[in-house]
Image 1 (cartoon, helix red, strand yellow):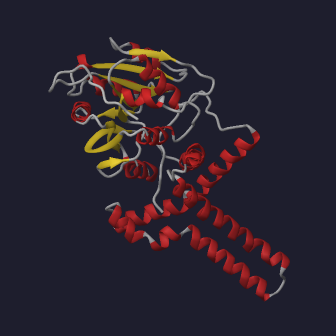
Image 2 (cartoon, rainbow, N blue to C red):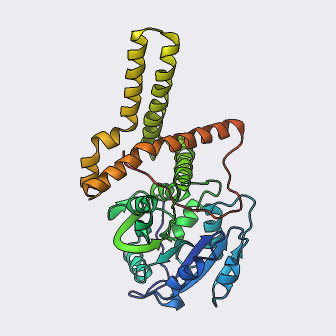
Image 3 (cartoon, rainbow, N blue to C red):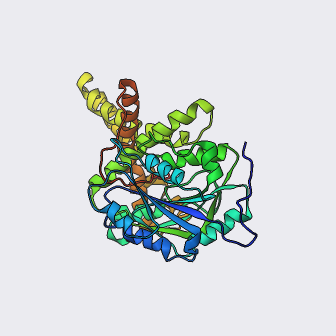
Length: 363
């Protein structure tokens, strides 16, 4: 159970914070990320910036070291994960609060002072988050999806993403991030922080702007595949506790994606064993059922998405197409997790640039 502590600051004084940035081959975005912290409204004497590099082959580390006072950690792990970088970063600091950022983000000028104020006023808060917005949602359908799905409604919530302000005491109590997860490490830590008795607050304020830079269908499919893997990996850790965190999401993927695959397979196999008109009818019924199961969001939930996401009909239809199709690569991600666990070959990152963050489409 948590025990609240004083942070060594006078009432009204802004507490200090470590800003931990993680990245791999981030030379195109790292400088603007660091500058966004330094140019914010929070006094720079209350901030320490730590850049945890996951094995870059470009000039990322040199860029970080151009800024006086910025600490650059060269981790160079064989299998980098976001958790490795985030843990190395916060453990290298000592401030009572830690702001985590991905290197492809820009922190809003007023965010840190606002979030630290909220933390200081409420000792029950273990983490505070705000809106993450895409810089260029107009450049692709995939960027637009990211802008839509990064955020939650203001108020108390159960988890957070890669950009978040966390109380050091909560990090120490929970041990920080799971360094083996290749996806879902942020929500998983949020779940453990909540389980330890802390509260997580979503403020009605812009926290960061992000550049997803997703322009190809192959990037979208790979991200969905990894999110499915993350759902399964996180749920496998949480399931023994009896908690239902992400259980519904995994069940949705396996039901819709698996049901579609089974129905489509049935449509192909039935004519092979039943060479008559009845076989043809059963085959068509099997295919129709599979298609309805897969495309149910597009068929039945456009109006719901208009209300819940505040979208016009055209955008709600686009989102419904995404919610229909995304379960297939996610299903293969779930299968990959269980196959890897059975064979002792988990999915591992290579030394390359990683995009963090998990998409949880609503279906």
